[in-house]
Length: 167
Image (cartoon, rainbow, N blue to C red):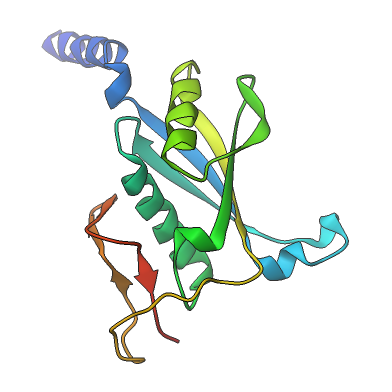
């Protein structure tokens, strides 16, 4: 009987979770530039992945998490959020792809996401035609994210853009 009481208490806590600490699930669709060049949309092949993140995380943390997913899926020579276009859709709330390029877009995205009964969205990531050159101080043999600290699934930038050099 004590076990049922503990389970009911946990369920009650989950129901009363504050909206800012709620966790959202993002279906991330990554489409490299080589695929975007294909004329036949049906022949374009991207990578899909899932990201879960609390709604109270800042835009820089969101970008770092997305960059980590891009890095894992495509291993680009240079990893920078400026090399991608990002859009979002939220079922029944924002069905049309909407820009997710900067802090203001992210705030609007979160505002709309909080209106959903289940915070979930699709994030579309499209690689731009020309990757921007990013200056680095690493040797060519080093392959790592610079300026990003990751602990478990929580990444946050230290200073400046996240950059991956190598290959």
